[in-house]
Image (cartoon, rainbow, N blue to C red; front, side):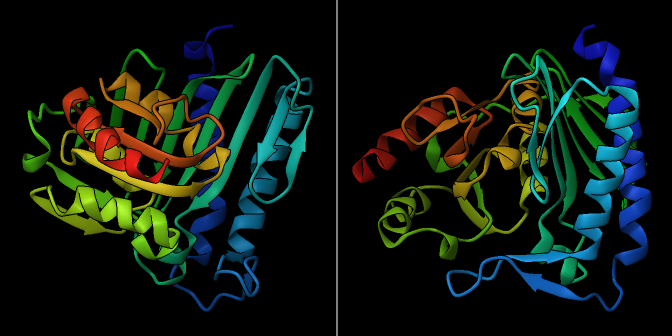
Length: 262
């Protein structure tokens, strides 16, 4: 089967996740902290319930497939096909009642992401991609996604979730880029990457990402014509420090400034 053959099933996963999560959104939630004394890393009953629902659907439909999830870890991660699940990317926005969160789903084949989706059920938007093309579906209809051109870093709109999530050294290097761009904004989590794919943002710089944060977004970014790598310019499959850009010129300029931290 190809990634296209799995696209309907990905929509099923997104639907069951959304149906599970929405009753929790903007309600009084019990919140646990996975970060402990290191950093506040919230997790809710919605995260757990949504990942459980998606895992159950995968088990019933594709019992031989592997699964990597944020909340319940890995099973059969060596399988040819592996599903990567982040039920709520942007949990801090979720618990704050803000809509900048989404369910992330990726399908890996032999370790490579061949299909990815970000679903935001509250505003009924889905962004998906297979590495060659990327698509939007929502209240505004359906359309292809395409990054926009940006010839210079000085003309770029930059996003990061928060510089406070970075180490002191990484934050210093991020500031070098931030001081050059036209506009810098904070927040967005996975939604910012989709806005890059849609041509509204030019550059995203992050650190401390996990594989499930980035793998679902890679086919969307590249399918829309963008580029996403580590700060060192390598494939970002494992997460860590990530740079995504709509224009290769902006990506190259950002990488050059971030080299000071290597």
